[in-house]
Image (cartoon, rainbow, N blue to C red):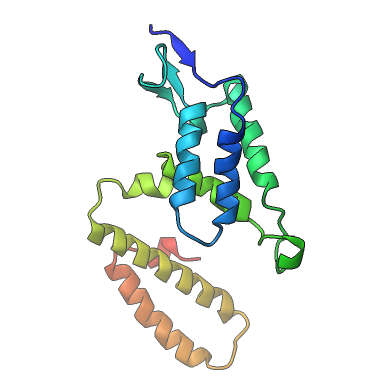
Length: 186
């Protein structure tokens, strides 16, 4: 069993603060500042084997849990505090420095992905060809459309006959892409 050395300095200071603030400045811009911040998160919060920064990473910062995750939770709180958000469904008031609902979470996830985190969708797509992935995406979009049409049927809107014709055509395409209308649709 190898020793684990937590390499997080006791005072990270302005180095990480500068990187964190850079993400806020770049909202809506390029990923360069997210990559920079992600690199700092890797440097300060990844757990490594004993021996320093040039040793093997044993736990990525986004996988740290419990007591080992305290520092990451504190950093996330500082990060999210930079993005005062409006309430869900409201429009952000830029004059008050507000961001749209979910902006902080979105940029935190982008930072994690930049550091190597894989979402469940990314894991599912591994090993699939680009064509398979596109087919899966198309099937999912069709499933959403068909389910929305099913919900709208109850309201009997104008043009219901035309909508039902389109529905039947979409259902055929959905089946062709591997979907099962009997089990996959609501």
